[in-house]
Image (cartoon, rainbow over all chains, first blue to last red; front, side, top):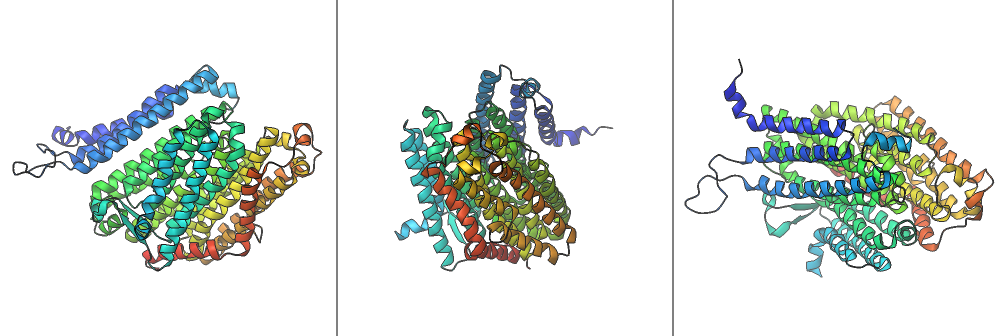
Length: 121
Length: 499
C-alpha cells in the first residue's frame, strides 16, 4: 500500500533527487553538447531546491523585525542560492559560448563526430 | 599603516580581483601585463606581511567581515597551512606572469591579451579566496570564480582542440563543484552553520540520525573535490586541458589549481571531519590510499607512452598528485609533512617544466617529441633547467622532490606499510623513464628542422625558468623555509586530532 501522506511530506525531497539523478544522467549520456549543458543546468537547479525546501516555512514571511511578524523563513539559504543562481547562469553562458566556438571550428556539436574528426574517441 | 595591516587577509583577495577589472578596461596588452605583475607582486608582499603577523606569535589570524561575530559573518582564517598554500599560489603566479610577457603575445591574438590577464587575475583571486576563507559556501563561490576563469584560459589555446578540452573541463569541473555544494548543503542542513570552525564544534554533538546525513554530505564533498584535484581515475579532463591550453596557462594551473583543491581536502578532513568522526573515516581514507597508489603507477605509465611533451607532463602531474594524497592518507606527522611539502615542491618543479616546454613552443611552435629532437644542443640553458626540474620530479637527492619522498617513505614505514614504500620506489623509477624519454630526445639526436635553428628563449622566459629550477635545488639543500612551514602546519593539524 502506498503511503500518500509520506509521499506528500517528502514531496520536495523526492522531486529534488529525481531532478538531480535524471539531469546527471543527461550530462553523461547525451552526445549533443547543448543537451549536455541543459542537463548540467538542471543539475544545478536541483541543488537550489535542496537548499530552499527546508528553509521555507509554511505561512512564514520575510524576516522583518515587527510586531505583526511571528513566523518567518530562514533567509540565509535564499541568499546563498541567489549567489548559486548567478554562478549557474555564468557557467551556462560560458558553456554555450564555447559550444558556439566549437561549432565554428568543427562544423558540428555532436561529440562522437568531433572525436572521430580528432581521431581519439 | 597599522590599520592596513589588520585588513591584509581581505586585501589578499581584493587586490587581484579589482586589478582584474582594471585589466579589462585597456586594449593594450603590455599595460595589462604591467598591471597584472603589479597585482601579483602586491599579492606576494601581502602574503609576506601575513607571514610576519603569523610568526609574531598567534597560531592563527582571524578576519571577520563587517565586524560581526562568528556564526553570522564570513570569516577569513589564516594558519600555517593556509599561509603555505598562499605562498605557492603567489610565487607561481608571479613567475608565470614573467613568463607570459613573451609567451602570451606569441600564442594569443593581440586583442585578447588584456582579457587573458584579467582572467588570469580572476583565477588567482578565486584560488586565494578558497585558501583563506573559513566559510563553506564562500569556498564554493571562490571555487567557481577560479574555475570559470580557468575554463576561459584553457579555451584561449591556439589549437581547436583547446575548445574541446575547455568544454570537457567545464562539464567535469561544474559537476565537481556542484557535488561539493550539495555536500555543503547536507552539512548546513544538519549543523545550521557554514563557518567551518563552528561546524567542527557542532559536529561533535551530532546525534546518531544526524550522522547518516553528515556522511552523505562528506561523501558528496569528497567526490566533488576529487574531480577538482584530478585524483585517479577522475583525472581524464586534466591531460587534455593542460596540453592544449596556452603555455602560460598550463604552467599556472599545473602549479596551483589542483594544489588548492588538495588544500581543501586537507582542511575539511583534518580540521573539520576528523576530530569528530575519527576512525569512522578510515574506509574513505583507505580508498584514497589505494587510488593514490594507482595514480602513482598507472598515470606514470601513461606518461611514458605520450608523444606530446606537455601531455607527458600532465600525466606526470596526475601521478605526483597521487604522492600528495598518499601523504594525507598516512595520517601521521611524517606522512602529512611529506604530502604538504610536496604541494610546494611539485608546484615549483612542474611549473618550471611547463615553462621550459613553453620556451620550446615559443621557438619551434611545437612540443611534439619528434619535433624536439636535438633541442638540447640548440637550447642548452632551457633544457638544462628542464633536466633539473625533471630530477625534482624523480626525487633525486639535492632536489626538492627528494625531501617530500623522504618524508613520505618514513611516514609509510612508521605505519608499517612496506608495499607502499615499494610502490613509491617503482613510481620514481617510472618517472626516470618518462623524464628520460624527453632528455633522450633532446640530447641524443641530431637537431633537424626548426629545432636546428632554435636558440635559447628571451630573458622574460629564461628568468622565471631559472628561478624555479634553481629554487628546486635550493629547497632541496636548504629546507628551513618550506619544510619548516609544512612541519608547523602538519603539527597544528594533528594537534586538532589530539595526536
